[in-house]
Length: 400
Image (cartoon, rainbow, N blue to C red; front, side):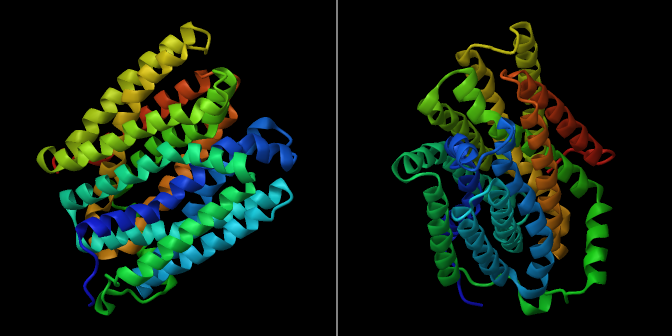
């Protein structure tokens, strides 16, 4: 097997490829009003589908590409996924109706499902346990820094060339990542470890994952906490620009919150080997629930319109807690699945995306000109995350 890139290049390459999903979401946010206007969207909240449908498509893509990654290797699946993503970008660039835009976004999501699934399996091929959590935390730190600059980048492209050019930028990044990966990264799944592609084996693997309490519980938890982020992203543009009247300044505030998530992931990568994934996750979700419950109470008392500074004071540490959770929950869910890393990553990723995109769309549709629906969504989804984690651990001990 050809020697691959070193640790730093490997982590950076993985982060660049995974960050395409973040760019595909956050670069769109400043352009949502223009997209809705140009494509004649009926209801103002419907334009949020440009964000949520991509995650739903990625869930489908992960289910499709996961079994293929175990049967034919990680590398071909990643290459095909990038090709599908590029086709979806072209579809969106030339769309003249909102329905066609949504189809293009769905295709992009399906395409990102290939790299997303195969990358996690590729990391799992080479690392396990806390070492994998460390890798994923560093990757997620870089992954989350991208949203810090993505809205500003999207706004710059929007002002200079229009919203269609944003998809051109995404397509270029896809081509760069694809070229880098193809040249530098060797296949990590040996032919002896590949599983013949058959519906029977896939069904058996699906049942095996679903019957594993630890994997399923933490998958559900991962989906719920990701739903918090999707709820925020779905309505962020409207909240910052309509509730707080920030106009073109809103990417600055989004960047600040994104850096708290990325910073938490980086901190987690340095302390997870000492404290363990589960202990850190439990502490993070408890603090998250305390913060968001207080914020909900304050928001309700103030009629759904807290001052911007107060919202940021509560959101910043809450987003830090989410950053601790993101890398750890997926790593714990993958821990029992080394023998079926491809299909395991597919099921975990797709189910998590279906949950997060559905909750994100639901909370986003509840936007009423205030932050109260978002605050309620944070508390409910945080509670569901904690319940899923507790269910997964019972009767197991909270170590590791």
